[in-house]
Length: 324
Ligand code: PEP
Ligand code: MG
Image (cartoon, rainbow, N blue to C red; front, side, top):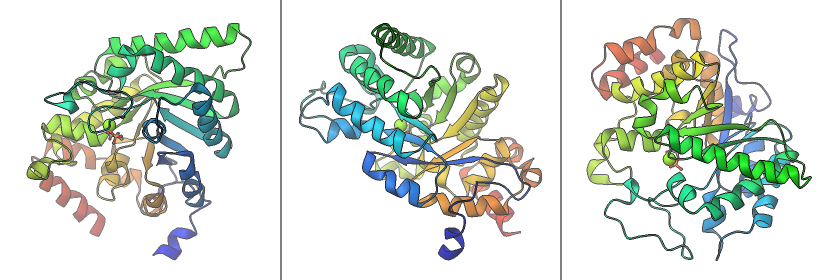
């Protein structure tokens, strides 16, 4: 099987009926680029920038960040790179940035909530990104957006830093898409409204499942509730994708589910545009995609969200489909 996958390394990701979708990779540091290129990913769908902060003894400077972002953008040679602004908090902490003790860190001071509150940190990151944007195809997304106001506030800060740089004569791209993670259920429910203002969505199933099922993603005692195929989750995902398309925007997924063989037929059936996963999954998913036909899959998602009741129903539905 591995040898067969290898042959797909330089091929585009297409279905049996010739529809093209992007298979991208998730990275944590510029060192991960080699894996992305070796596995023939069509872009980077999630660059988790918090590792830059976690691997440092103090807040990374604008210059340090600029170098890292530029390296990734240049390394991808014009392919799209989706950089997520820092997602600290929850289970990720920085020794030099004391965060409040919280009863429920995953429901607390995290990601965009910190960035909008500690704007000097956010502005430094955005300036580094803006400067790096001249060296490749940069897209920026904000993590943990729950309300449209948060997205608007983040976008405003971005626009302010952009104008300052332009005024100072710094070269920045004029074509940076601004999107958001879809991982807070409140935002997913209102995806139709968000879609009018964002350039794209990237569905973060790791958190979307955790928050929708009210089950800590790292707690083994409730791991039975981590149900990617639960019709409630699939309805949200379908709504997010359809809402994006209605406004002419694209929708991707960068949570674990994006690289899952059982999920793939469902996501193709819903028309998800971009699939971002660990680099080592890219060729396996490309190979499976090649065997599936979107025409044949047309009604699968409708059955999964309207007729199925449980996670297991849908697992069976897809497995039967794949084995037929
Ligand atoms: C997610 O929540 O699905 C996601 C991709 O982000 P992270 O795993 O970094 O929270
Ligand atoms: Mg997340």
